[in-house]
Amino acid sequence: MKVAVIGGGAAGFFAALSVKQHHPKAQVSIFEKTQKLLSKVKISGGGRCNVTNACTSISQLSKAYPRGEKLLKKAFRVFSTQDTMEWFRARRVGLVIQEDNCVFPKTQDSQTVIDCFTREASRLGIDIRKGMGVSKLERKLGKIGLSFIKDPEEQWFDKVIIATGGSPKRSGLQWLEDIGHKIEEPVPSLFTFNMPQEKITRLMGIVVENALVTIQGTKLKSTGPLLITHWGMSGPAILKLSAFGARILHAKNYTCKAQVNWVNTVNHDEVALEIKNIIGQFPKRILANIRPYFLPERLWHFLLEKSGLPPDKKWENLGKKGMNKLVTLLTNDVYDVSGKTTFKEEFVTCGGVSLSNIDYKTMQSKVLANIYFAGEVMDIDGITGGYNFQSAWTTAFIAGKLA
Image 1 (tube, rainbow, N blue to C red):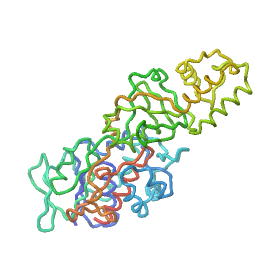
Image 2: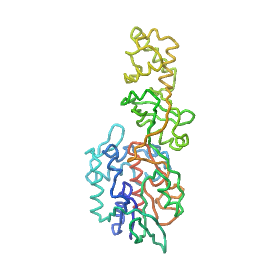
Image 3: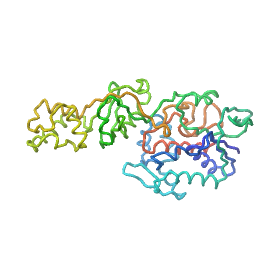
């Protein structure tokens, strides 16, 4: 059996390894259009490679995917996060689980993961071809022919696994549309918010550990750490919001109003009670010196300035009007978003081959037999935290096993 894997990234390598694990006699070739293998693995997680997430609940895990939840809920029963960790450990890659459940190699170096994959591919006799971009795919007499951009000779295979990753432009998926697949329009996911008109960018580097962010006029909301940057806002709360709101925010041309609840408490009466408690305990202290909810000092001073309340005013002199100002600012602070910033090397897209074209049990195309899909080329994407790699490992494992 001859199997071609198109794409030399995370999903491509894992699919090829899965084919050889389940079908040792198969001839497997990986075709990568560039000269670089596993490039996204190399730079992911700041060069440390967040290989998976330690969450073991399938229902909870699948909720981390704005697109693909239903497919992955079934797929994770075949190859879970625990299976991923066992796979790496069995190949002498030690892992460490962080407090936030993100899983990294003990070396804290993505090269460890790359070396593991290339070592395994070499051991199993997988043929790897770089600079081999596929220009066309066709079926004839039960075989699948691949034409290459720089090689005029057509090559024929029994099975083909497509693991080309996400494409930021629809044109990158045109060849799959040409053979009958429905394409969901690709738009960016996992991006940060640009706020060029907002003075809060002066506070770059500040992290609020548990904020609640919503987008005015939508049902979008997200909680978690929020990072203030020199261009606007980032951190897990913003990235998660951008993932679940990818299409909505694209339609708004990334121009909207973000409401920030700095204390992640939606009950205004509770926040008012907290302010009253401060007044009761520290009536003679000045506003600048007592921070509600232990907010970062620079952020608290910025909010006081924004509210127009003098930082040297004593808490006992705050008054009802002043208290209402603070409660509103802590729970409903509004900022103008004007654009986004994506990380080009680590781009994640919403969109790709429609899941309606894919058999959830096998990852096989419903349009053309013996063609399988793995990873982000499908309309699957997750939030930050190792979820995108996990969906790549899971779909690649299944495609390789059943190809």
